Length: 211
Image 1: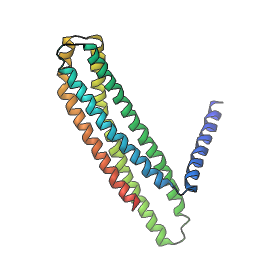
Image 2 (image 1 turned 90 degrees about the vertical axis):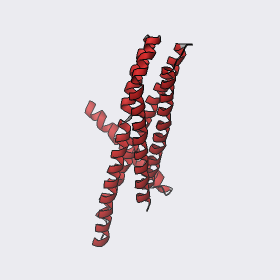
Image 3 (image 1 turned 30 degrees about the horizontal axis):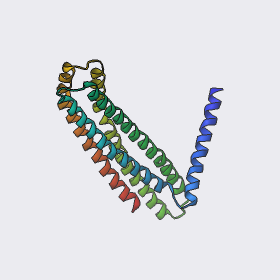
Image 4 (image 1 turned 135 degrees about the horizontal axis):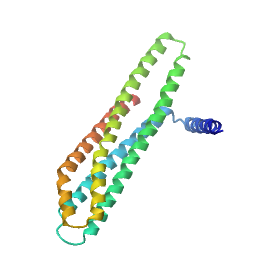
């Protein structure tokens, strides 16, 4: 019974996806255009993540430099930055998955339609372009996934410190934060660099696929 339900759900999802593409194609928007849009959405999410983690680092520094006052407010601000950072990281993962979905469909369609080209010269030329485009795409996604992974060390450190601070609102807790400042600063800088590399790699791919 479970297998039947699973198959039925899969058919519905495939049907919805096909209808989605067909609807866009009726107004002149093809899978290639959708792929470019989703890559640009991912770039926007990566840029937003760069800014979010810069903000989180600044709030971490503010906590480290705490010198009297309401320590709970410091904790609340740091916790808020951590939660926003988690959401930013999750958004990137969703956008990358969206890119992979449409890219797979585009390449499958391209490969299937090669057989419909009667001219051997045109068919072989199209096949070469497919191979080259797919290779460049794989390099771009590899860069996206590498940038995505760069958030994990920062999130781990932030989570550890937020949880520790939550139950230890005292000067000793602040001292513990100071011990991790160098590490988290380095990790955030690495994150920003990897995000920028990914954004640049995506720009190169977009230029190639548009021309």
